[in-house]
Length: 424
Image 1 (spheres, rainbow, N blue to C red):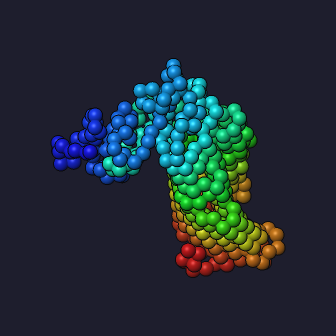
Image 2 (cartoon, helix red, strand yellow):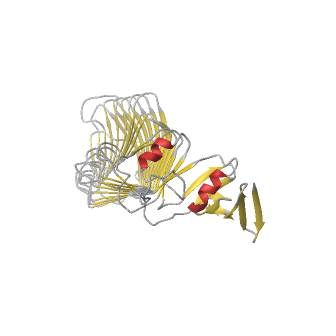
Image 3 (cartoon, rainbow, N blue to C red):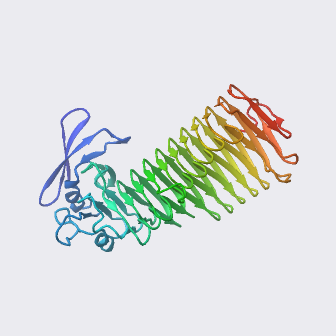
């Protein structure tokens, strides 16, 4: 049963009552964009789920418990494996920081459908039968999970992972294959030994990857964030506000084999990779909508941002308001190959201190293929090493009028000048 006491025009005291007790939480008009969310401490979470009709179950893990525990708040499991064994689809697993080590949490975690894995260092929201609640963080740092024999966290369908530190795995930090939907936020992934940070493959629905810090051992490792789809799958993804460094490539989103991807890559910081900081491609008969904006991409050995379409694929690309600086090769590259198509709008980017042919490079395939088609709208960009446009004689390169760009322009091959709006 739920009762309310009005204490101001926008603040309520709320009491969740079971047969034995009532629990007080705070109800506010707006919490992180969610109206009428109810903020509570984790101590009250168990009482809430035990209330009649709460609509969810929670298991607690704390590796400082001297007994095996039963998974309750006052007697939590002392190993993550115990929670994995006891939990069912749809359950919440809440992991305390504990003693700050991976003791009892060194075998990774395999999730079930609709489960949520939350660490004590982050707040999180739960949609319950009582309404939306926000559970406040208990500690400043999250729990440490390791796995020397595989992935840190294996995803199932419709999982949420928040506030976890995954370190030193032999596989991926967080991994999913063939899943539907995932929400991965506010995690720290460090030192994956042989795979990469977050790897999700051949999946559908919406993937949200936000506010994570992902750091590799060296720039010869695999990719920091790697999303790749094959076959007739449809996926959308939002990758934003992540910090990624020390990988082969920082952020990778590839579509293959007739699949469709709509990707938004925004407000990330990517550095110290050995190839591209951000690489979003349409490959082999696929279709990819890419919006790459407001990223800071710097100090990478290779290119800053790459958008490539190959082998009869098609890409609609917006690259805007990025700062791409001090990379060993070109700052921004838009390219086609083997009968592919790109419509690209490149606007308000800063490309300075980069190597290669130019700060911003656009080119069609350098091999004879009459089907390559590139259309470029370039405006309000600044590049201290200029802009380089190259077209193989049998391909088509359409260029809208250049507007308010700062930097020298170099062209090679036949560039066809078209009207404003032609490429959009």
